[in-house]
Length: 114
Length: 118
Image (cartoon, rainbow over all chains, first blue to last red; front, top):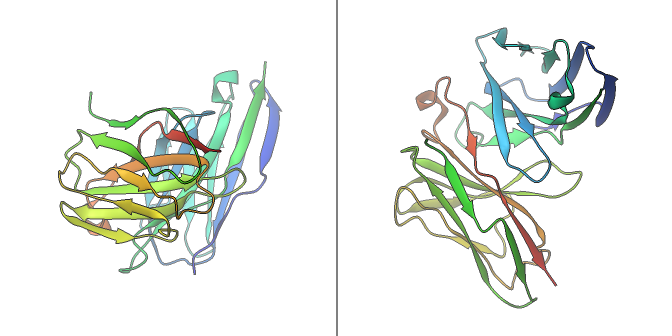
């Protein structure tokens, strides 16, 4: 059974710092992995989607990498800003019928201090 | 702009009452999902629908019911049988449930409904 873990659960950093958020999963038979951002009381916004055949995806100051064989993904945020403060969640999607649903981690709550 | 609309944003009900949460999408997506989010837990899948007039139970379907009479709409009813209904409910959609049809297409979410039952 797929399990997704995000460590740390919470992180505080000063503005301008580069930071890495971690996501690990137990079953490497994934179709893709998505990173989401969630602001308090809001829904999830998709940040990056990495297919299993890809190693990384970039969007602006965000870079997500995927190492399927080791069951790990990282989300790198460059030059962090207070507006980046939010909870970041990762989710993986399986490859076989019955596992197509996304499995979510519990998220990392990020606070960027001005 | 295309998106998913959930209403209402906040909902208060007395124990023993059924309540229906609305989810409408104009993204022309075939697949729609309902998730429940509780503090300290990942999102848990309640029900999903791959196509109109079809839906399947997710991991925590007990005490919930859904319908999919139109492509755009996937309402969720929280019944009195649900033991702990107070939670944040999120509706999502994607082009399709089968992943080979969704290459590089992300899962889209609405802004959620916070249900409080007392």
